[in-house]
Structures are given as C-alpha cells and as structure tokens.
Image (tube, rainbow, N blue to C red; front, side, top):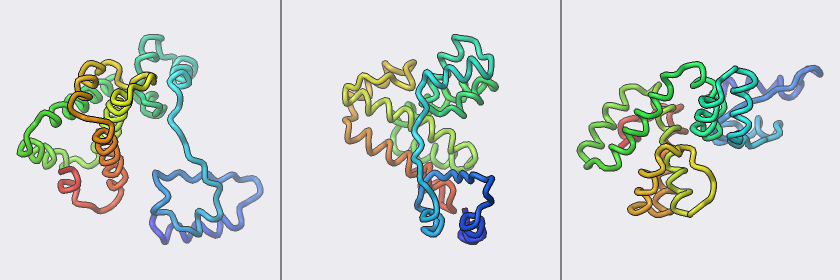
Length: 198
C-alpha cells in the first residue's frame, strides 16, 4: 500500500468500531509503515497442510478424490491456488509449462536465458504465478539435497529433482529459492523486470 493510503488507514486503526476486526494482509513488512505495525498484532501465515487442502477441496468444492489428492500435493500449501486449479483444469497445464520452462532454463546457455528473460518480462501479470511455481520446485530441490523426509510438492518431478541434486547443493538451492522469492516480492514495485529476471 502507498504511504498516503496507509496514513488514511491510521485513524481507523486508532479508533476502530467495536464490532469490527480488521485483517491486513501483506507479503512483507518492509513496505508497511511502523505506525501501522505498532498498532497491529502480527501473525506470520504458514502454508496449509496438504491434508487440510484436500479436505477443503472435497468437502466444500465437491472435487473428486483423485483430483483433490493431486491438487493438494501440487499446491505447496497454497490453498487459493488449489481451489482455483480445481475450478480451472487448464491451471495444471500452466503448472507443467512453468516447470518445463524452468528445467529448460537450467539446462540453457546464457544467451538462451537472456532471451527468455526478455520474453517473460513482456507479461508481468503472469510472472507472479510462474515464480510461485518455480519457488515450489526449488523448495523440493532443497529438501532433496538435505535428504528430508517431507513429501515433495512436485512429486511428479521427483526424478528430475533428484538429478538436480548432482549439480546443485543445499547452498545453491537456497540461493535459487531466495532469488525467486526476492523477485516475486519486487514485482509490486516499479522495477526493470527484464533486468531483474536476468
């Protein structure tokens, strides 16, 4: 939110009506004014467990068992994505395309990567979803490098993720994950998207 909009919100936070509970959502505390955070109780949200995602899809959206299982697994705890994917089957195709592109980029030379960065920068609105999916992939690579017993979000890519661990160690996976998350956070600002993608 812009500082002027946050300033306008302050009066409501200082004198809220007795019947109201105000919930403010933000990707990061960095752009939020200290005058807002000092008047708020901060709750860090975590990904929703796969079983809870599955239950919501089955009980509230009538999703069949196989599809609910698949989406709960792929969601990485992002229940909004799972619900949207249950209602829009083409989202699984988009997911496959996004992960295929990442795997292609990993194996590409620098010139190919720069060209793809230029192409991706032209559709900034689609980048957030793409980066979120890439984040789930790097999380899985990190889990594999550490030998964690946690179930992979992208279990259908287990073979390629295992192969990645031969060339990427835990430190490299952390760097890739942080770079992806950083760029995702920067999309809300007026950045040079092509340079950031490169």
